[in-house]
Image (tube, rainbow, N blue to C red; front, side, top):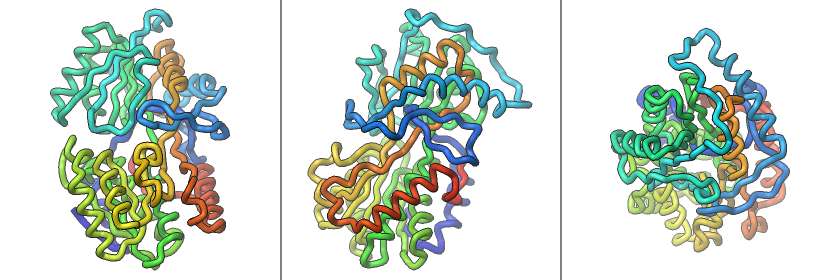
Amino acid sequence: MRSPLANAYTESVAGWLAIVGIGLVWLIVIGCTGAEDAARPTIGAAGQSPVVIQNETPIAVGKNDLAALAATAAAQTLAAAGKPQTTPAPAALKPQAVQIGIVRPVWEPIRLQEQALAAQVRQVNTGDPEEYVRAIDQLIRGGANVVITIGTDLVQATQDAAERNPQVRFIGIDQYQERVMPNVVGLVFDDDQAGFLAGALAALMTKTSFVGAIVGPGWMSNMVAYGEGFALGAEYVNPSVVSLVEYHPGELPEGFADQRWGRDTANQMIADGADIIFAAGGATGQAAIDAARARSVLAIGAEVDQYDALPNARGVLLTSLYKVITTDSIKALVKGISEGTIKGGNVSGETRVAPYREAEPKIPAQVRDRVSTIERGLKQGSIKTGLQLH
């Protein structure tokens, strides 16, 4: 655990990165990259209204998804230049032959619309890598030839399974593929940008000049991205604001399910003067938002739109930085990797600022405009968070 001031968080970035290395994922296909990340293809149309599916995950899909997916092959060929591939590209699958399997950790806030995907599902209840392996193997023995795994912690199990089963396609959600494999695609999100936007909004709204971020385990690169991005965003708009950042000290699933820790940490930050709380990390983060609600302190959510997930907290919720996903875009990704138009690598997903809804009257127009300007700058590449995780 830690509670650094704004001038100390850059030291923690290096420390955490030395511990955790590189990774990132979840499942989605919608684009938002700047010019500096042109090698990673993007998918999606930002203009469409989100729709709510299982677990209140807002989704949106654009008509250009298939074209963007098709571009992945060339982009990943460039990314993999000079790197020998350990397995040959698998033969294309006929559409009627595709059978989807999903490995779903019980603690992950993201839920796919499994029935619409006609998918087999294996739920994992512990953070034991051997359970991940068993779940994947069970799906493959059951006939799955496209396996979707959800969560950063499954990246190694997914890559190992892909090596053992070169004829099977794998999609890793929130799993950055540092090593390009022909039968693995990672759906990744710029969580540092989500944290940066949350920090900017918090710093623009605070009256005490103290803001807090409560996130999941600090060994997870996406949690580091949320926490450090938050501190960087707050500093960007107001260097005098102090950012208090705390990472859960444990492993999974506890790190995403520790409601007591989330609540106690939020209460301590509020006692220390924080009047805006940002939270990420499954039920741990949701408990922090609930603690803010109980103290009538404003909060910002992450991962999914917490307005739908935590209706009791709507009175204090400013917004959420949610990951955009659609069933159609997942189907398009499955189609691309099955037919061979996607050769492996990474596809960028989009994070959006959720509608302010009831909170809009509390947020001055100039603050909303500033957040929108920063969001555009991040997506276009004219604003950079300064945090490099991969």
